[in-house]
Image 1: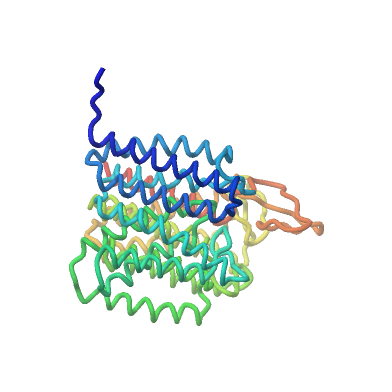
Image 2: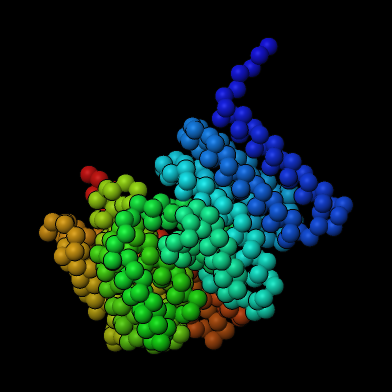
Length: 461
């Protein structure tokens, strides 16, 4: 009985055999040759992901391959959860995330060359960063959720430069091409770099490949360098948060246009100035990376959506996202600054100043003003109608309200031995309300995502 297999299926089966063989080799080397766990994981990482990149380059049916990768993602998720291959203390899903990344990239139609670039960056730069970080960094710091190191970041960037040169040759563009993947890796946790790095690298490669040389790009990069110095000197951001802000700015400018950066910059500057009115409400060293992503991450995703589809619904969603962030920031800061007693939006009880879920008349009016300001700016910079400006303002205001509602219902609140309430856990504090995982940054992100999705659906209709 003859079974005919297409060339695509043959390539997939061969790749499966290669990865299975490499996995068996690594397991035996760990067991019989005392190969360190870290080294074993990096060998398997480089071999498996680079093999998948070769598969992407050779298989013509991308939709079929997308489905195959998704099936392997589900299988590998179980493998990671059961800790079948490696016995690290914390469960890491990195072994599964890279398959999900390839599945998504193939499904949305990213070019083959861009996906292969993302695969090679993920395969070879992560081991370099891990080795250099372990070798040279004695005191790693938390950038988002996990400890990372500046030497590790530099190692990843240098490795990414090498991969970039292999793809585009010696060109000043490689300095920028390597930047976004390296920054993205700084903010990964529990193996999410195997999802984040391929997605960022591939999309970023396609973004830069689609742009024609112009004078705006080098000028914008120069302005970013100057702005970075000002931001650090004024302590608007922590040093660990600055790369996150640069990442969002680069995505907004190159995937969309300078108008997108201008809108988000107004929020950033306005929010930073308003926060200075309430020194006790924030960190004197500046906003951290969690706050940057909570308020600007959805906006950057809208820019990527616009780049991939050119659908103006993403513009509407982007403006709503930033209007919501502006409304919430001004409402919180000016509401605390005022002398009124906050009232819980759901339970209608007096709240301590600064606690999520509380509202005041001054804060509500300030939030409405912030939403109107950002919506009006959108009307000046983008070809949207007066009616759309009005809808953006309304949705931005409702995003602020949603933030208060979510904060009242589900945000974690703690009480210490003296009876003082706060929103951060610590020694001697008892959880008295909400869910521990839902912090203020999580509330901001959830409310922003909800109102942005609503805006996108409204724009589609």
